[in-house]
Amino acid sequence: MVFRVGLILLSLTSVILFGIVWMTVVVMRPMHHIEFLKGLVPLIVGGVVFLFIGAYMMRPEGRRVSQT
Image (cartoon, rainbow, N blue to C red):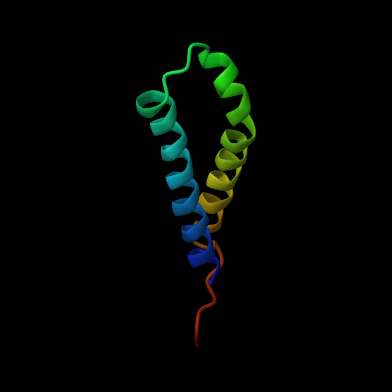
């Protein structure tokens, strides 16, 4: 269950961060790139945080219970 939630978080944040990069590089060409990126800082930081949370949740658990 935790692996699936982590996988969903990881994939959603990957799509969001790719969309931000795509908008910045290809679609929008504003005169002042810094002013445009200042508005995207919360999305970028939130995306990176959720990317790390998703990757952490996808790690296999260290303890295995042996069945005897």
